[in-house]
Amino acid sequence: MSQTYRSTRSSSPDTISFEEAIIQGLATDGGLFIPPVIPQVSTETLFSQWSKLSFQDLAFEIMKLYISSKEIPHEDLRKLISKSYSTFRSEKVTPVVEKLVEGENINILELFHGPTYAFKDVALQFVGNLFEYFLTRHNAASENKKQITVVGATSGDTGSAAIYGLRGKKDISVFILYPTGRISPIQEQQMTTVEDSNVQTLSVKGTFDNCQDIVKAIFADKEFNTKHNVGAVNSINWARILAQITYYFYSFFQLNSTGSSSKKIKFVVPSGNFGDILAGYFAKKMGLPIEKLIIATNENDILDRFLKSGTYERSDDVKVTLSPAMDILISSNFERLLWYLARENLAADINNKDEEAGKILNGWFTELKTKGKFTVDPKIIKSALVDFDSESVSNAETIETIKSFYEKSSNHYVLDPHTAVGVTVAYKEKAKCNDSQGLEYICLSTAHPAKFADAVNKALSGFTAYSFEKDVLPEELAKLATLPKKLKFIEKADIKLVETAIEEELAKMEL
Ligand SMILES: Cc1ncc(COP(=O)(O)O)c(C=O)c1O
Ligand SMILES: N[C@@H](CCOP(=O)(O)O)C(=O)O
Image (cartoon, rainbow, N blue to C red):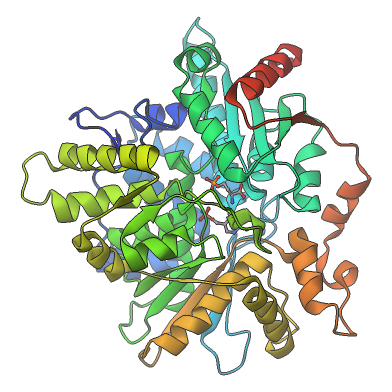
């Protein structure tokens, strides 16, 4: 089994180790690191062994397939996993709430039981501990002490999850860029009220895509990167995707532990940067018999448009929606999927398939940069549609679903607006497909509703029995409003302004 990594844009046969891929974050050619070999798991192993494991044991079985024990000995990997999930409020880490509406096959996979109440915690608690592990080991063995400057972009959730994963960690500083006024008040409070001196938030006048572009440009700035050892916490970092694979297996087993072919499962995933659903693609390719992965987008629907037209087109017109964490125009991780699709469909008959796929991807992404779009061979779309389907959802539909789900579910279940986008898509998919008997939908619930008071109250304030403070808001989040905020404004989405701010703040930090 190969446990090495290569860039999606590389046409060289060279590969790098897991540690290099994680510490480097983004490849110097602008590509994302991927494992060219996806490990396979037999049906026998899945249903006679893995289906009985706890979340932590399952995470260990999956991760050890992607990380050589020469890099992280198994005992250390187990400890890293156990530490990472000890901070979760649910014993199951990511529980499935089954059939909330009587007679309907919609199940909710709750991914928000970590420290910051969003799915990002599942990966970022692990990533924080992984950075610490690699740095401590390096610094103990070398006279050349290393420090990492983590620079991340957020549309609201990655930022706080990264900060909570890395706060107070030795030799690591964290800078998080977010678009001013485009995240929810609680998300901003979560990020800006952390007192640890190694953390700084940067509120940037612009959109999430501007922030993400600046982060990628900082990685490409050789001088700055070499001087500061820039690290990635966004899902450009492979460890983010890896850690998310576990909950696809774990939730599948919660509904179908025997592998019974009459119990099929479709996953519906609210998508923006395509990191969450990409983990589902890896689970499927490893052998988990997922029927379909359904991409659910809000009105920022580049992914849905691509699957329907074959043209990946950047627009500058980001729509402000009620699911702001998905207000994203360019989905970073889509590039990873395209690499596998290009290799399978356009390089199948070539000897050096990996290198050829890299060449193709490089061509597409150069076109995206110069012409604002690229179009793929119809074979790519046909192949993508074997694993994926997609739908987009309007603000009005989002509100309607929060309302109707509250009305008809047991215990008046409150959906956050991102989860509501997914649930709406599940209903659309049900109406569109002639699903077989026994088919179940697992809708990923990517955030706690308390993080998005505006949308939730808009949908539910008409119900006399409903109270946001009493029914939705956890005490831990309510308290944040009273704490002092630490943030720095960046007047323009400009890389130089951001680099200067980082250097000014770094000089003040005692790492
Ligand atoms: C609450 C929430 N839902 C969904 C998404 C979309 O996930 P992804 O970017 O991995 O597609 C995000 C942000 O990434 C999010 O914060
Ligand atoms: N929705 C995200 C955007 C960043 O995505 P990432 O998964 O690449 O970190 C957020 O909440 O910040």
